[in-house]
Each structure stands twice: as structure tokens, then as C-alpha cells.
Amino acid sequence: MRLKNSFLLILILFVSILTTLAPNNFTVFANDLVKYDGEIAHLFTHCLIAYPDLAFKQDNFMRNDYDKDCLTTSEFKGILAGLYQNDYVLVKASEVYDIKNDRAYKKTLLLPKGKKPLILSFDDVNYDTKKLGRGMVDKIILDETGNLATYTKNAPDKQNISYDKEFINILSNFIKKHPSFSFNNAKGLLCLTGYDGILGYRTNLTGINRESEIIKATKIVQKLKEEGWEFASHSYGHYHMKNISNELFKREIERWQQEVEPLIGKTEIYVYPYGEYEIADAQKQKTYKHNLLEEAGFKLYCGVGKKYFFGYAPFNIDKKNRVLFMDRNPLDGYNLRKDHIEYVKYFNSYEIYDHKNRKVPFYKK
Ligand SMILES: [Zn+2]
Image 1 (cartoon, rainbow, N blue to C red):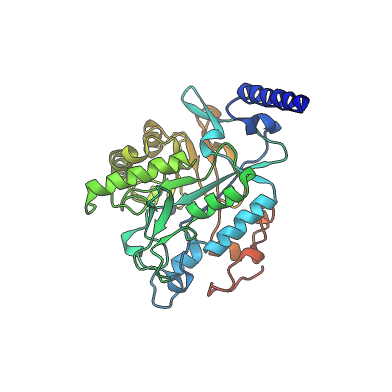
Image 2 (cartoon, protein in one colour; image 1 turned 30 degrees about the vertical axis):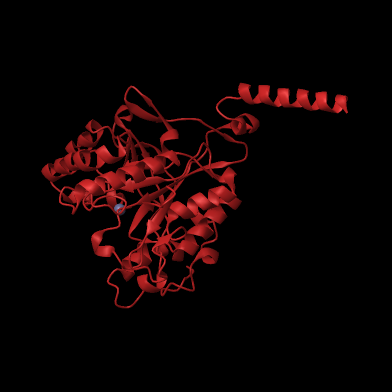
């Protein structure tokens, strides 16, 4: 009996020494981290269609936009399951590059053995006033216990507060079930505009009850950051970059800095609205607009493309002037139906397509 007890004591001592020695936390120590220099997948979508019946109703003026640009909750869940099965692991967007001499460079990642890195980003997480009650949730909230949830005033199922209608809760719940889907507490990248506030709060200069909205939004941002979510700028007014004047573009950046930056802090990541970018001109010089972005502190630039690209661009200018650029694969009804060959490595588009709720049928090429 005494022998058994001392064995137990030694075992406890051994484990506690090991735990103290481990860097940061024990799981990292126990995991077999290996160097990774391959592709880093980056997929993006918008806020999810929470209530498909409402979203696709004939008299809903948003129905075509939702169909083309968004995913339903069941599609998003299917995509997560596919990515997990195919050994993808979420990484933070801020952790795929290094800054040297004020410029961003790709970096070699250290990842659990056998895993492929993945960034998920979500555009336009502002729940525009004009879209309220048309099939999405109204806002991100903190519930009575301080946990992230969503709120919908006129929810068709009468559940104002929900935990399974938006990507924030769905992704967190998935990671709780499958912890190895997230590395270093990574969640997703929220790409915000500012013209109608953020996260469902009217924090813009002209917003109603702006001061109290700012207080609420700031608390949500803090909680999101704690849980591993990161933020990018998706411009202030969501204009087509090439179509607006230099003056308006300058005002855009100022508005971002005045109205959104104080809420989320500085971000080095800029996600072009519509994936449309303008870096250099015909004379191979960086444009006025691009220089403004650099001056504002942006270092990683993200576009939209089905094919993989993470590298230095544009190619037509001198190498030393190129910027770190990352394309993102779009996830939405329009692209799922196209059944892209490029997506086979992630999931099966036909299987995850929401045939039951969508009005537009899936078609093969
Ligand atoms: Zn957008």
C-alpha cells in the first residue's frame, strides 16, 4: 500500500515538472510541430443566411444577393466538416507573415504534423440597417453570462437570442468538438467597413445612439479578440477602388481611422472591396491611393480569386516595391454551384449545397 502511494507521489511530481517546463502550454509541448512552407488556404464568405425561408422569399429584395453572395448555416457547417476531414487547421491571419523594415514577408509556419493551414475570413460583418429582418441575424451580442451570441428582433422561430445562426457561434462550437481544427486559438478574420457601423451597432458618425452603440460594440470586439478572432479593414464605404477619386479615397481612410480604428485597434490587413485593387500605374509607380494605404499602416493586402496566390505583387513593378498579397477563395451560392475543381481539396460542393432551401438548383459544368 505504502509503495503504491509513493509511486503515485513520484508520478504527480514528474507530471508537474513536465508541465512547468513546457513552453506556454502543455498541448504545444506534446504536439509534434513541424516546419511548413506550403500553400496557406484562405477562404472567405459573408454573414450567413440565418433564416432561409425569409431570405429566399419572393418579395425579399435581398434574395438574389443573398443567394449569390452568402452561405446558409447548413452549408457553412458542411464546409467546416469537409475542411476538418481534409486535415486543414485554422491559423491566424496575423501569424502567416513577418514584418521586416516596415514590410510584410511570408514566413515559415510551425504547425502540428500532417496539418494544412487555413484562414477563414468574413466580409461586411456590419448587418446593414437596410438588410434587417430579411434573413440574417441583426447583430452579435453578449448574452447574460457574457458569451457571444446573436440577436434577431423579428426572428421567424421566435428565438431572439441564438447560438447556431451565425458563423461566430457555429465555428466556436465546431472547434469545441474538434479542438485540433484550431491552432493557437485561431478563429477567423472579420473584415469590417464603417459606413453603417460594425457588428450590428451603429457606431458611424451619423448613427443613432452612437455613444451607447460604441460602448456595446467595444465590449463585443474585446470578447471576440479574447476568443481568437482578428480584424481587417474592408475600407470604410465599400466603394470600387478604381472608380472613386483620390480625394474620396483619402476621406475613406480618414473615416476608417476616426470611426473604426478606435473600436478595433490598428490592423495591418486590408481586404479590397469586390477584390478590386490598384497598386501601381502604367508607369510602374505605386499609385496615390496605394501609398495612402501603406501610410495608414496596412501591410498584407487581400483580394479574391479561385486560383491560389500568396506572394509579392504586382509583377509589373520592381521586386523591391512589391507588396505581400493574398488571394481568397470565395464561398457563396454562386461559387458552390460552379462546382470548382479548385475546391475539391476542401469539400464536396454538391454534398454541402443546401438543395432543400435554395431556389437556384446546383448545376454541373
Ligand atoms: Zn465586401
